[in-house]
Image (cartoon, rainbow, N blue to C red; front, side):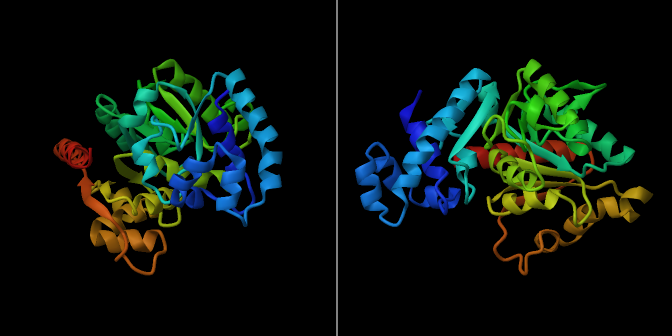
Length: 317
C-alpha cells in the first residue's frame, strides 16, 4: 500500500481541510507529508490527533479499493489528470477503474435527466460523432448523459463516467448508473469517483461530481437544459477554465424554440457569456472564462468545435 496516498487521504479527512486548501498548499504538503512532526510544525493549527486517527480509516478505504480492483490516484501522483488539477478544488484522491488513457482525451456531453425525444436524438447524434476520437465524459445517469454514450442500448467505446457514489456501484449507485457503468467497463471505458468505494450517492454528491466532469474535459457540450437544471453545476465549474463550450441549437424546431427544457440553450446562444452568468446565477459575466462559445447545429459545426479543441490542447500542452 502506498503510504503517501494513505497519508494524503487521511490529511484530506481532517475537519476544515478541503480540496482547495490542499491545492493551495500542495508544495508544502508534498514536502512534509512523509514526516508528521514536520507537517504539523508547518501547519500548527491543524489537529494532529485527528490525522493519526484518520490513518486507520484511510488504510481501510485503500484496502477496500484494492479488493474491488480500484486504482487510487493522489494529487501528488504524476498520472493525476492535468486538466482536473486546473479546477479550484481538485479532489486530493480519485478512485478509478478501467482504461486510464481515457483521462487524457475527455470531452463532456451533458444535459437534463428529463430529456425529450428531440434531446435524446441530438445527444445520440453528437455522441456518435465525437466517440470516434474522444472519450465522452458525463455522470452516467438517465437522460442526455445516457443517450450521448449509447446507440441501440450499446455503449460507445472509451467512455469516461464520473460517478456520484463510490465505485462499488452495485451498492452505491442508481440502477441506470449501475447498468451503464458495467457496459462502460466492458467497452474499454473508465469510471471514476472522488468518493470512497462504498459511499452511496446522495442529494449533494451529484453537484460535487459535476466539477470533476468539467475539470477532466477539454470541451463541454450542452445538449438540453432548462435554466434551473443540474447542468448549471457542471457549467459553473467549466466557466472558470478557459476552454471550449458548445451549445446545441435546433433552429426552426418549435420545441427547441419554445420549450423550457431548452431555455438555457437559447439563452446562452443569444447572450453568450451573459447567458451563462444568468444560468449559473452569477452577478456578472466578467469573471467567466471560455476559449470560445460555439453553436452546434450541423456537422460542419461539430468539426469546427473539434478543431477548436485541438487548437486549444496544442497551445496548452
